[in-house]
Length: 325
Image 1 (tube, one colour):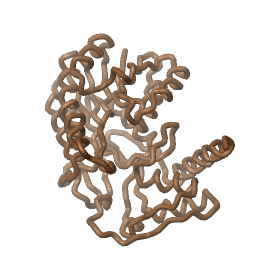
Image 2: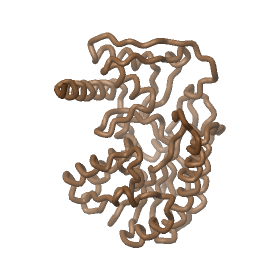
Image 3: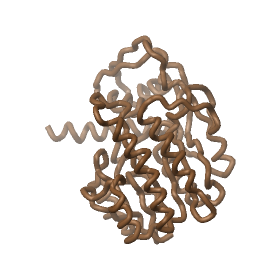
């Protein structure tokens, strides 16, 4: 493996993927391509200092919608594999004017173009990170479960994975990974999902609101490191996995379980309010990932360990912030 190109490699999930690929492939160049809208290229610079094989394309030039620039990067660096993590998310945006269109242009159109250009450039393996949000809510959902993407983000991700799979052939390995809700701490910690939100707000004593229906309904999570492990596994097993989509999970947990573990680890009270649900809860589903596990993938993330590590790290961050004032 000479070069592995990671789009979105400076983001929350991407940071750990970049780090793990650098460790797993020390003789390969790990090239980050990130527009840095939500990413943090400065943190990638830390990885670049730690691992000699990490490099990045300047963020002011990196936009997967720029076909000419992507063509130039593929021609210059000649990656053997592409890990496509870059995406536009609008589900939680307050001002969505124009952002739904960005979802379509980034998650669908640009993704399809990237796969086509990669194939034309002789890339061997293309790993696309999709989402379990495309499924209809339910329990123990497998890859062939009914789908009902309701938001612009989910619809664009669904169209994106459909488009890239069409390029799969005997010379071009296309693999789609559908991660559960990614959770856990890294240097680029983001709190845009319920697990991370509850952890960070409990540590920093910021009151939060939970819906009653979510307290006992199990939800499937994916350790941020298991997400990276799945990417490595897909690269290593590309010939077996090509042309298909795979759910990736670590564990199921209810919010009550998470809250109990946080209270135990934090050792102090925190404030939150419980409200009745007024609309259908899109978060009520659990995901089955036996398909990738039967090939040998073994997730290592455990709910107790992830909560403990996240709270410990966030407390250190809180202490650091406190020392600055």
